[in-house]
Amino acid sequence: QVSELVQFLLVKDQKKIPIKRADMLKNIIREYKDAYSEIVSRAGRTLQEVWGARQGKGRVFGGDPRGLTPVLPQVFGLQVVEIDTKRHIYILINNLPHAEGQYLCSDKDKEKMALLLVILSFIFMKGNSVKDSALWEFLHLLRVYPGKQHSVFGDVRKLLTEEFVRQKYLEITPIPLTDPPEFKYQWGPRAEKETSKKDVLNFVAKIQGKDPTFWASQYSEAEATP
Image 1 (cartoon, rainbow, N blue to C red):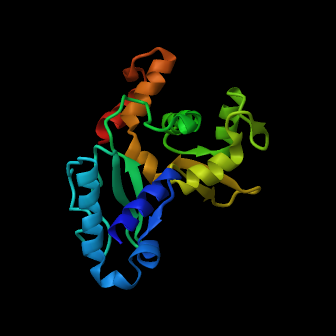
Image 2: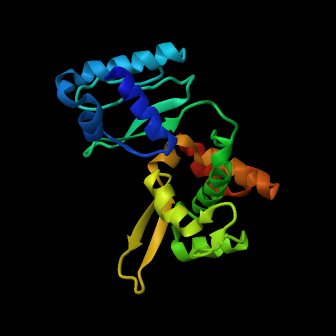
Image 3: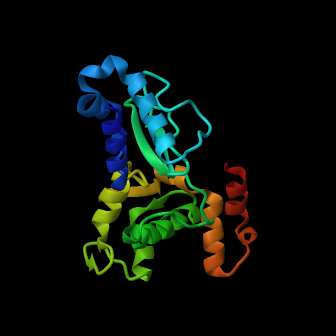
């Protein structure tokens, strides 16, 4: 069960699919659910031994029998974070040190992550929330259109509204009393964990060729955010 759990977590991370404790119990732990805490603890130790990881802040992987509040190997670059305490849903985030404004990802996903970084930057600079109409108008300037197949990103609307939302990079919320219906985009919990407003502001400043302090409100917010 230990090796199966390690593989299960890593496979889920390949597509950045949120992990449910119920799925771990059903698919991996199964009849050994009474030993759940021990199994996940051993999985954490195995990852630490195999990849020479050191334990970071937080409880030991699997230390809480009711859920996962683990730290997976920082050398391997993954940390399990609970994003929904009621339904016990977790994500694996990239926890390796990286340059400001950049994501660590495979070559295959670099283009998507670049687009995501631009979108996260736009959302932050606009007050942490933007209407879908404003976002698409902005993306038009980059020659990225909803409903039109892009040579690099494919179906862009699907990428934003399904893939990035499923991966918890973005959150889309209906705006009440709008006809036709309108939606707002905000950072998702994975974005909050994998990057920072300071990184994003530095990225924008570099693109614009200005000092981050040029945007006083965003600079104050970025400096105040851990």
